[in-house]
Length: 151
Image (cartoon, rainbow, N blue to C red; front, side, top):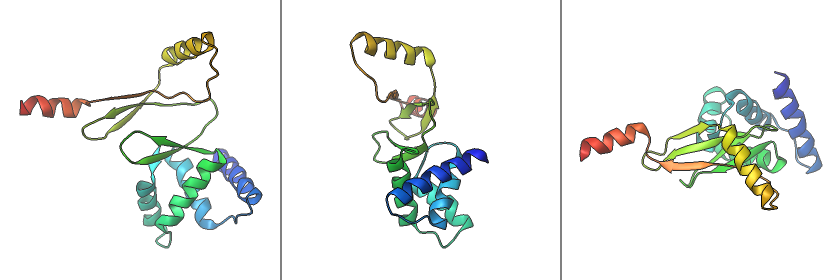
């Protein structure tokens, strides 16, 4: 509950600095993102919110997510499938992704030893890392089985 309040306060402060209004709908989007606790895309979040709040519009959800990303409280994730996903940007937390090139399933994973090695290599090359993301594309188990059954 405390995290939700902190995110809302920071978002509302950002809106105020941009001379934008704090609205119930924008706060509902923030609440939903915190409660969901994982990456999502506009359509999924819209359907989740619409089930509880039939008056919320798709464009409102989209614009609110874009504002959250602009504020730095969320980040946009592009996995090459044409769908922009959003997740809350938690300080010091990162996710990497396995993306099935057939069905589009996305699986998050973490591997701190790989991250440490990448940071060490970048440092040795005099490179200052701003963001770090690993995205591996291939076939998930389900699609591998399906493909082996069709051959």
